[in-house]
Length: 477
Image 1: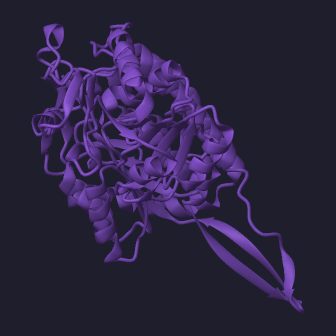
Image 2: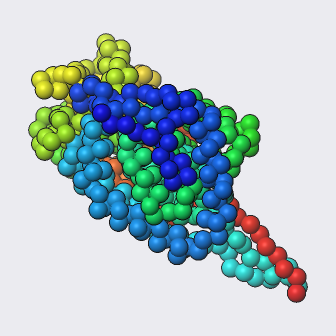
Image 3: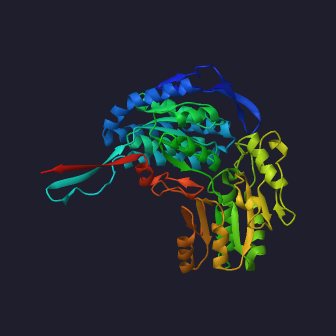
């Protein structure tokens, strides 16, 4: 049995109340450990530690912050086997894909932010008023509260704390209740390479998260999670005029035109839709395909999925994804399929996986056709290995359907017509538009959405700047 503990001011601690929650391996449905159920006292201790560390860390030079984060990245890389095994145990993720597609990527992202700490930009100093020189200071906000989701526990922790710490802030971070293991491991490394109090981790449930958001100390609170959770955070933060940084849900359209390479589009959409069991806000879950090639595309996607997109246990190198994260999420996905309208057709999957996966929260790769724009599965985020396919008649019809949801995080266009690709990228109301691909991300480019997908950016210099404030300084001469 694994025992997870909070890490506050560089030291491991149980919850003050002694309360714990059970941790369940999604691949087996069995309990493998416990984590603290932190309360107001624990959150207050963490914020006190962060506040005590804030002045010195803000005064650290960018090069000092860079060195700390680079040592952090080196330690993660050196302990790669430990992190991959722990993430798999806590999430059911496939070992090899976790190593190549998550751990290696997050180490690169951490190193990016280490370098970005030294490249803050602002307007040049100048005499904008006669006899006076003005310049801009970009400063740390101070203390930041953060909440991460269960779909990419260790990577989302990096996305949250790395830019905040690089910018000179101190952090209190709460991981998702079901997946705290690797976040606490990260905090243990922080205790070795960063000053005490710079990164503090408190584990717990929604009540703990509410304490993190409502506490008077942080000047900014950030969450990656559902739209509902983001609205609750924004509502609570508004009572104290805290800034918010919200990366929320998605319902990404993938628009396939008749001139596209259908086989290549099917593969890209299959990977983008089924990776991590579809538990990704940017997943290619909603395909819009031109009516003239609908049947051909659906056949190509189904053929690709049968051969390449099946669930499997952690050491299955032929599988594409592991289980859903928890029993509640499994029930949510099953509920969507059970409520399908009569005009919908399940072309592939639609069932819980069996065999050696029977005891876990595994679900088959699924394709659903025949849905209409106002149907539940089109409008709401499923967050599972489910791809829907609709038809459109022309460019305007495709845009109307693509933009006709509450979300605005990610989208993609598949076409060989360069002009059409540019027109669509300008008209799609999403924070990211991929052309002839779907789901790749790089540390240098921003990630974040519009509408009910939230506001603020992760990754890139934009993500770093979101954790700073701007001050004007004017001097008479």
